[in-house]
Length: 228
Ligand SMILES: N[C@@H](CCC(=O)N[C@@H](CS)C(=O)NCC(=O)O)C(=O)O
Image 1: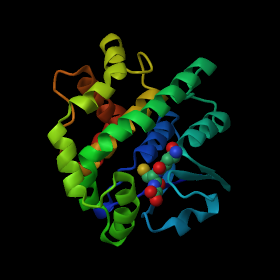
Image 2 (image 1 turned 30 degrees about the vertical axis):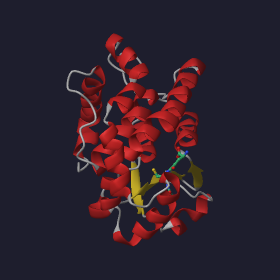
Image 3 (image 1 turned 90 degrees about the vertical axis):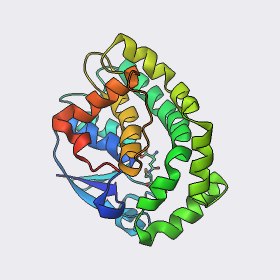
């Protein structure tokens, strides 16, 4: 029995990009799980895993923290339907993971931070003002977002160029079928979609077509999550 501790916003929204990686990984492997919603100020719920962040899973009695560690744990414990079919596939996924964490999220966050803040549970808003205020150098998130949007989307779209080139050649980042590199990038788009109505991609962008395929995947699992 697997329990996933998942970040929760207002109206039971679940936008965490890292938790989405785990949800896609579990679904890829045909594993079932139950979810425990965790607010930003409910870290006591994940204290058993000694983790300040979600996702955390409890697999039986075993706590596993961090989405990448969880993916590796799942492939080790449940070798069927691997997320990483080879050492090289695992390395490619690790590279994409790092690119999404450091480049895609960094380019995306200022574009959606105002909308995100508006959807954080009221009880968690002071925590976000403090923690994200430090990160952005201002807790006026509406102003941070407006400034980022004034600069426009080209800088964000440029960051996606490696994915765009790949998706011009093939259906998924991982090839003919989706795997962990796709889940890592799809998590970022789910995050954006759930907290903000901003359209990030041009309709003729190959990344746009891929994103639609990802939202449709596994009976529309991504699309079923309530959008902003
Ligand atoms: N490297 C971690 C990052 C996880 C992470 O940053 N999660 C965010 C939610 S998207 C979190 O729990 N933040 C808690 C906080 O900011 O207090 C992973 O891949 O799991």
